[in-house]
Length: 199
Length: 189
Image (cartoon, rainbow over all chains, first blue to last red; front, side, top):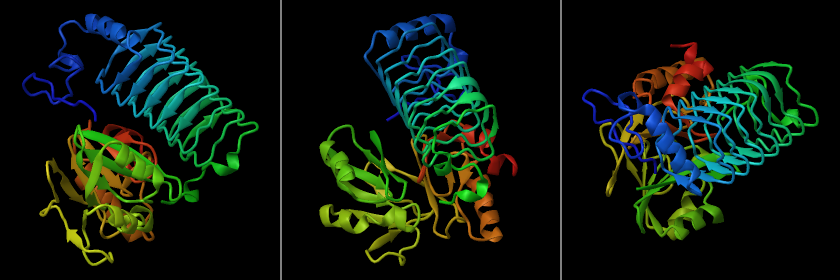
């Protein structure tokens, strides 16, 4: 279960951060909190049930971690290495991800919707039932990944690689796609037109 | 409180299990396909399904009920008490389900089907086929599409943006995402 508590500041209904009674907006020392959170994340093998909304992380190695049921919405992640991690039911929506490595990760029910994803590498991964709706993504690779039942609805995909991917049940309706590479992928099993899918 | 999601490959449908921190009675939201994986999820976590909440009576969301009732003595809660062969306790916005320590607000959201309900608890909204990531439920006619969009606007988009959404199909989402990225809703706002 997500640990959701409301910020203790009068009139604020944002969720309070992990180990704090207040939300990011009402933190006295946000940079100090980022350092504390980075130490917590890099020092734990299993990271679960944390609300770390609006965290800023740079050049951090989180490879091989198990990250489960966390809220990392509106985070700013640059040069973060998640390779080999297992990431399950994690919200990374409305975030900025630049030069992040997700190679050989196992992503299940992760939410990247509304994020700006640039120069990231998701190659060789299992990306099952993930939410990429509304992302603005460029110069990013999903090559040789199983993207089963994930959704890229209303996304912007520019110079994105989907080479040799499993695209079964993947939904791209309303997406703006330019210079994407779908070679050797089963595009016939994905949905690009709005009429093709119904619940 | 513990929360689990379970995905059935047969109808591509989700069901959700909410239980106490330790062993004890649990709530199942929709009973898609009651297969060995779902049984193992329940049993391995020491849970007993005591209450089942049905988002709507479509095959992919209720097919597992008969099997479930052979294993658990559960009460079934749905909008339309007449629509299932098993005894059902009718629920609505004015008559929410009583599920021991777990409380749910019921939202009536007709459109995809006349009996569609959403369940809100603890910052999490279970939307069935009413709303999913980047999409809305299928409707056979324009009238039902208008009804569905009206239900979503009135009942769901008025909730807090932080609400986490767990649909009957597809990956999880959040209200803020759907407000800004769902093409069916952005056009209609």
